[in-house]
Length: 307
Image 1 (cartoon, rainbow, N blue to C red):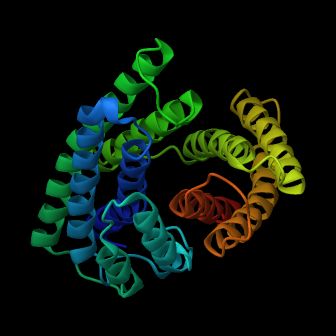
Image 2: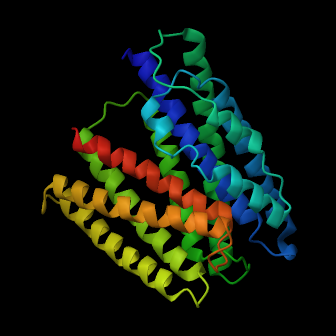
Image 3: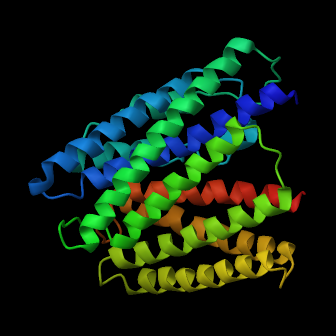
């Protein structure tokens, strides 16, 4: 693939996944504050709408410029996304623009395109603006975490969840920065960085799910707890691979097996929440959110096996 089109494809695919993640983080924060912190509610809502705008721009130039593999992975939208958005909007009163989800459902991929200077410039502009917006959101999350840990604010988000979404914002920023700088990639180092990052994320997802399930959901709590422990071990394995203590292929294979099982658990849970068959305080969009992140990681792991 021509270098310019590879730059376009990598940028658009990253934003299609992560811009949606960021707008949902903003939504979760917005709906978690108390009325005393109306200023923070307004700031979170502003970030949410800015990421809606960014995502809309990305969607408008993505048709035919991204891979079929990404479109089919379930990381951009899942079979549950639209329903989860509608239900979450109903529960909170926050108007979620489902037209973005419908537009993403109509995207096509796999078309070989010639380099287009206007498209490259448009993507570069998006990358630059995205980096500024991501950095501002990461700082906002850091401020919230500091306030919560100092007992100056109450929110229904776990402190670890706030830290978790702050790390995801910083990770997104670094990925955009690497693409925009046209950095030459050290493939092994990139794989290890991704596996260390995402194994920790999967461990924390499992623990959040465990803590947000109703106490009567004994079987689901036990399953989520077991996944948490398993991904803690996989995070340790990824660190060991970085130190050359174990082969990288072992980490990839172990992570692939565990992530596939966790993805299936999340899919069942997301559907169960949508159908009101699971007792929890998990808002439907959060279930779908964690499912898409597992789908994203699965696609990465499958690609690493082919290296």
